[in-house]
Structure formats: C-alpha cells, structure tokens
Length: 201
Image 1: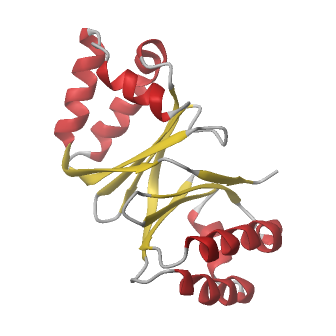
Image 2: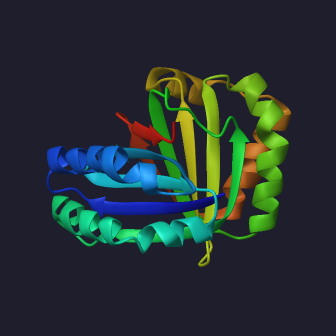
C-alpha cells in the first residue's frame, strides 16, 4: 500500500467538501489503484487527508491525469494557506486498518527514530489492542522519505476513545505503548471529530 498525506488550512469547508464529493463521483472511477481516503478538519481549521493507493505507481499515474490537475486547481481555492503533501511508501496496517464507519479519528505525527522497530511494534501490538482497547477499529502507519510518520487511528466514537485513554492498561500493553512513544520525536495529535471517508466500491 502507498499513502499520501495532505494538509492545509481551510478557507471554506463547504467548498472543500463539495470538491471532495465531486472527486469521488467524477474522478474516482478512473483512478486505477485508488483504495480510499480518510478526511477531517481539526478544531483550529487544519484539513488532513490520508489517501490510500495500491502502489506508488498508481498514485503517480493518478496525479498525471489532466482531469486530476484541473480538479486540484479548483479544489486548492478552498485553502487559505499552502497545502503540503507527504508521500509514504512505507505503510503498515493495524487490526482492520480502519473503517468508514468510524465516529472519531486521531492522527499522530512525528519523526520516527527507527522505522523497522515501529513496524514490528505495530504488528506485535495488534492482539493486545484488540483485547484492551476494543474501541480502536484499526489504524494505518505511514512513513515518508524524511522519516515523518503519520499514524491514523479509527475509533468507534470520541467518547469511547477518551474512556479508553483513561483505562489502566496491562503490563504488556503499557510496555508496547511506551516503546512506541519513545521511538517518535516531536509528536503532535490531530483530532478529527467529524471525519468523512471515501472508498472504492
């Protein structure tokens, strides 16, 4: 899997949502290798889009389509700041990877010290999280060439996510969480309280 992370300050949420709807309806059918996307806007107006493709080649092919370029020139007007793109070729999934039925999404970003160990921890923690944090539906972990990791975690709801954060974890779960946190520098958390989704049918 290949992931592209898109971020920018929103000028018009209504225009942005309309542009995303138009892409799904008009361009998605011709986007070979596109798998789906998770979108949301933080309380302070930062748009975050996590778009999934089967491969880097598929993503590049999509970006080169003339209709994609025309669509983006129009969609870019919805932002009032420069939009950044992070291309992530190192991607792993946790549990179900996510769900379009998630009621809350939290995005964790930072610079990873050891990407191989982070991916090993992701695999190791799946069964532990399924047991101790059932409100976590799944996650994607994507790392770009500069070592910036974007972990996108899907929850059943924000209320259940907050309740899970307050729970006393077992020893194994605490060890895994502590080690993961230690691997990532300059962590920031982006809460998407009203996420929306798109997936290939």
